[in-house]
Length: 365
Image (tube, rainbow, N blue to C red; front, top):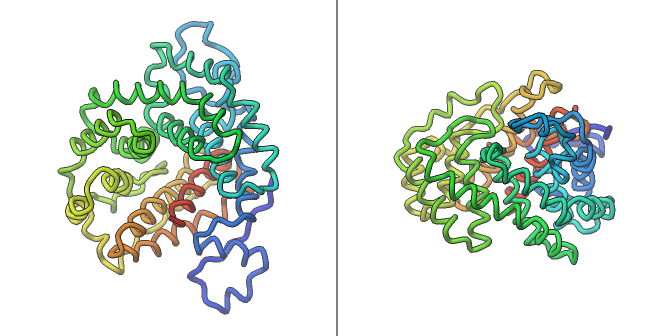
């Protein structure tokens, strides 16, 4: 197990900073929102540790008969690790995005070997077979779907010589997921507003990015329409009700993240002023989510909430200077949860790295 990083936030005084150890000072630089090579080397260990670890595993599948009782690696020959299917998917995304940013990772050869060994056309075809069964029509809807499209996006943008083959291998599954979105969204009458996997706004955000990047006009237009149908009339989001006990997504901030994508700038700002007017206050603050037990797979969700809140706040602050003060709110969330990341128990370690990386990527844009 990796040793835990010490952490010192940018909000500490210079006196306290001088008292920090070198390791603490190194991690302190994370508060400046730069994913360094040193940090990337630590973070990549998290998915490397789990993507080929088959147990413990939560299937999330519906069994149609005794024939469906198979080893996870048989049902999901690519995404059988990291406790569940979606965590395995974004574990692969974590490795690809880190390697894309830092080709000289200490573990670069090992990461490439894992990708080449598992993201094969034959193994992806078996994943497609699983999804193609009617009984699994709603499998991983829409959380895992969104992460699969994000992984596909990352492979397509990666300039490494092996990336083109890997992206092509995964494309049949990405195409199937796109079909699932197109089939499902017209039937979803009301959005799901929870702070966990089925949150509609989160499920549409990464899919929208994929549609834009791949010039998939049908998917992009459908997501835009449904986002407006679901959320355009929302006002005064009750963020004071957050978080719920197991949240790893903020229903209010995920909705902002989606509408920021699909609405023209001025229309979005008008909508936002009605939806969460308090965000415009330069003194706006938001209490971080607190984890009481890091070995409880549900309670540790609150660290994920801090990271996902951060990436939405960074995105808003990056695009709109009038919301630049929200970076400090995001910083506070990162500072609270980042120290727990490396060396954490498997309940959080198998997935939280992806959330932290997404937040760090957003902070740097």
